[in-house]
Image (cartoon, rainbow, N blue to C red; front, side, top):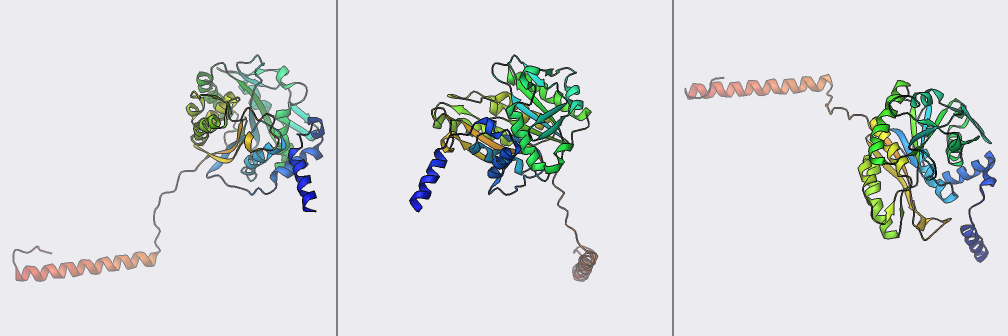
Amino acid sequence: MKRVLALIGALLIAAPARPAAEYESWANWQRRIDDAYKGLKHRKVPGKTVGIIVPAEDRDDILTLTAAAYNVVQKNTFHTVLLFLQAPPTASLDGLAVPDAAVFDTSFGRFSVDTNLRDKLLTGTFPAHVDPTLFGLEPPREVQRQLAFLKQMLRGNATQLRVLPVYVKFSNANDQVRDYAPYVVDQIRDAGLDKDLLVITAADLTRANSDGALIKADATTLRGVRNLDIDAMIEGKEDATLPDLDALVMGLLTLRWAGADHGEILAYGDSGHLVLTKDKRIPVSYVAAGIASAPPLPADIPHAPQEKMLQIFDDSLRADILTMTRQACLSAIDPTAAKP
């Protein structure tokens, strides 16, 4: 019997990823997400969690990392979700792209687009662009998987949520992100959403030529996530690249301008540790992270009840009287002694 169970387990581990068509129904999405959440407990990131980073992949062995990120915002309240995604390499985009649609219809429900925020992003110094070719007639699959997690997390309240997916692609990430991030935050504040917004960045982490190069590159990349340091993300990495760099730095710097001050790594994995790896020749890493703004620490002022204060006063008064008495005695004996 044990051999049979072991054989079944080996077959399950070796099974290839299921085709995307199998996940079109909500029942299948729900089953996948339920499996991803198994064994995960709610984790509180210090401060108010204002954003998360999730992998861009949707394989079953990656979804657990995504669930770890959504776990830290389960008890949060937010009105709008701003979703940053890396645009495909073939996209003719240099900046930000937003959808033209007012709603997204999926097999598991309808989601409203935050048209107010979208319209604000379409105007100004660094406007986004409407790109029907990127979004198509229905939300792209990378958008749908985040909508599925939101529906699972919010249950019946998902209908009240507004979403705004934004594709990102820069010709010069180092320069452009420093212009676009503060501009986007200004539009968020003009829309009155600065305290009612969750920023999700869907991005894989690092692709490298070897496991050693991956570990070396992620030493600085993960530090960049923790410190919201885009310079650590952008700096040159030998034998390694960040395939979704534009989306990553856009998400991090937007959150930093919005008031976030630190990130926490919730889960990390690379393709060498995962079951359904597509290509073992090219190591890829993934991360789930929570980005938060910590409230200022309260001043450490000790509180003493009235009885304690009276006791301190009485003790001090008795000490003063004793000191004065001693000084009076000394001055009577020695005229040069200090007078009370």
